Image (cartoon, rainbow, N blue to C red; front, side, top):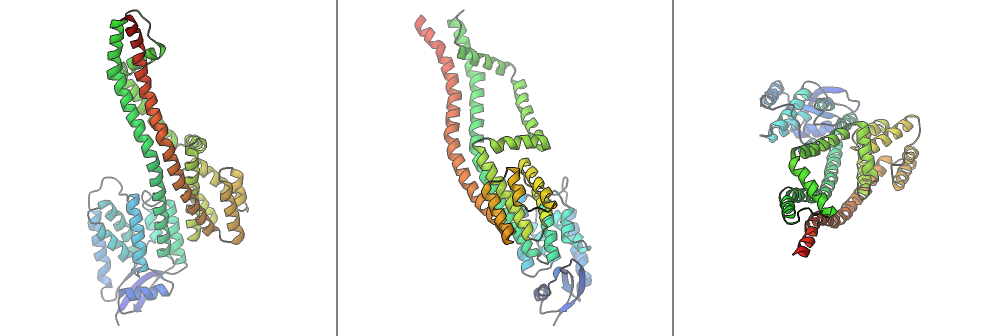
Length: 417
């Protein structure tokens, strides 16, 4: 029976090296996995001296490709990579071999190949998988690295990666729902802005000239004067108006990145209908899913709360979670501090309290996430059905106001005739 050399980690995270007899490499991996070992590398005893350099050469080839800036794996591809890694490890493949397989599979996607090649090289050099991931912070978030580190310590990396893949897929689904809900009003607002700009710059000045020629010395109606004045300002100061709008967008963007500005903007959306319902539900679903996934993977409560605050994407929720973190650090449970923040809905607090009492907090948090993700679906549908008529009325009011303003002086013209 062939002999295989292996490098693996036990449940305590200590590296172990040795030899094992098995029918093939996959059988060897299954035997080591049954012993509670997490395989980082495995090879035939005869070919072991050649495998490492060969792999290094492959990694170097990908590493030599020209990439502008630091290579980053996009979210969708990262989700696919996570799911594939979980499948390969569950099938008994060694970590390095699984990474090399996915590196080759990346093909012409240089960014993915570079990142995976670097990670495989690091693991081959003796670095843990989580440490290798942490060296690429633009691709792998703190949540990702922390879960992998917990999975390594527990010897359940493949299960942890499966949980991560599920978490990322559901997060993408919620983000897609919210984007689809916001797409319609964004398109309508863009069309309204374009039509209004066209009317004010090209059509209104022609009407104003007609009024000057046919109604000399007569005072125009107030609405008409307002529209004509707006048209003059926009036509004569178009560049200044455009730059002002761009400045407002940039100001909003930079303000959102600051803690105070981000908190103010998030607080406005948190309390302004009809967006408040969607924002609250999506934020609670994201945080609950994050906490449940982290705690289910073996991450401590305090560390899970800290990571959830950093990855919440909403400063109002982040501050509330930090408050809960400080209370838990002092020895309290999670439910009472959550209720004290006034941010989390009562049903969410009640379910957390039940989870603490029954000792099933991670599964209860996951259930909360499931409930609120369904609520997000319903909120998106309600918001979409509500926004459609509002946007149509909004567009009609803008265009109608300009049209009415231009026809009001026509009454005087008809009277003169």
